[in-house]
Image 1 (tube, rainbow, N blue to C red):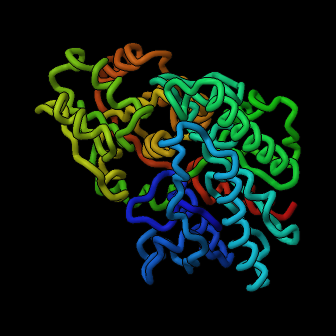
Image 2: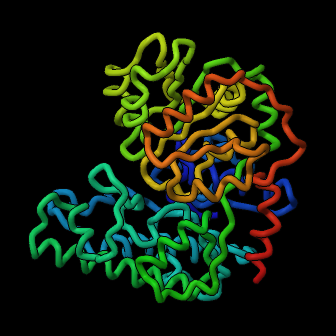
Length: 402
């Protein structure tokens, strides 16, 4: 496994995905190493990220800016340069060891496969819209970006790019997409939702995705169910929001829409940290809205199990949100916007109507008020769940072997 998101003291969704998959593969009898950043590595990197195997320092990612922010355009050479750096590190290590059946890349440089040694069985998983968007989010000006022209991307590098910056950024994005398209045609690719596959084809409609497969994101259901045992019965009126408090995640929009609409018994718990936390806490913190900061997985699982309802208010297009999967796995009602890969996750409901999708934030708050008017129900957890990593492993290993 290879990812530039590892190691780290606090793991995001992509990094958790890698560690969850790696540990589950090891429990299933496979040997797994994880390669990541050498500039963050230390003797206890594996322990820090909760990995049961060996962590391999692979590449230094310091000085990644290339002054794009100061210059106001995307540099055409930057991302291919780092992709080649990752490819060189993983190729040299894999060939030196000589006994890896597969190298599985989880990262933000989708063209890395162009630079790997052709002798390797190279697979990558695409976790976000970074297959065609250099910012990985397709979110601009507090709204979902629907542009497909590479030159339109210049507005994400500079507020008023002008013709020269537009030309340079357009060239950078066109090269980025072209190299990604050639990588997908050459190597096996997993998309964590069909939404991501469709989004890539919207930008590059003639791309060859015959070597790709959609395998949804997953969670370690066995571990989650054990952690949730400490949560107790659901508390009437408790509403949980968990995630990074940042632009696009919808915390600000939800709190604004919910103000003065929540019933008196409602208690909103906001779990997470991020650049918007201080401002939102100053504006919205009250006896009814509490900001708990970052919490370990054990605590988040317990809070999820003990909540009346979970809300995932992202206004950007979530590819395949693990927060939704965790709520569904624990039997909790979950509310979200009908965007991105969210509609695909209804197949993991443990009862009809568990995932309620809204077309707008006011409608989502209306769904929340309706849900809070019902008694909070404790539901027994099933022995297994469709979003469990152990159900995904056979599909992934089969793909490795193709």
